[in-house]
Image: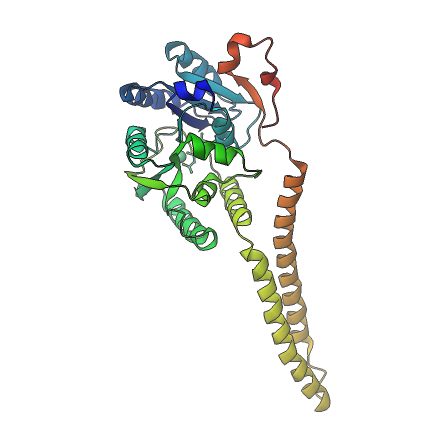
Length: 329
Ligand code: UDP
Ligand code: MG
């Protein structure tokens, strides 16, 4: 551990994408909470290639708030990649992560820190015990997601724990050492299995602006979650194959009987249905295989999941620092 880690007790990582509307409210609520803890801290605002005024606003806020550190990614890389960038750059003894839209209450961060210190915990999950402010679709899709993930990834994953959590330096280092490319932290962190606790909270409505998680990104997260943590879908392909095989055996007997009894002509419908069904099952199985091969492919390529464009912590040595051009993590 470097001396830098020892100086900063807490880092708060906030991924943000086009959050110009939520940003002023976030800063106004977060700063008093963090100042109130009374330990040296840094806020790592990861601007995930925003196209609105987020970067400009962050620059302005930084003048009045020296603890605010701005890390800008060169392009939009997605929530989990932005979190990765923040975790890799944070120097705190403990690292909290929170969304920029104030759906998770920053007031819980001191509680998380207290709990971690008191009970020597490496992980403190923020668990939502009420999602009544989310839309019906979001609630149902989230319910299905957590149900599936707990079945696939194991029960150590707390239901309804998103990306609001606190990690110790040891947990952060353990995560940094993992070779995973497409991290899904809500699964990766429970997988660590380090001593953990929970802080419960009510999920508020987004303070301003629109959700940055359209259906396409939600589906991507779900696919990454499943393929990253379970080979069960591949087994599903095997089971489909086995079932189809036995069904075929039955049909084989049927065709032989039909042949022997001379009723072989009116078989068009069953033949057609059979061909379509087998074709569909095969395509699904190839698609499943493809998802895993895609993961292997990305893992072999070892391309970075994000590119740092700027880190305000590098500023004093800006002209000399090669860190500005860092791509690999
Ligand atoms: N986010 C991001 N990059 C993206 C999409 C989202 O950094 O490509 C951030 C976003 O700014 C927010 C957090 O991820 O801080 C969660 O997104 P959002 O609140 O829109 O998701 P929801 O709560 O609707 O699931
Ligand atoms: Mg949100």
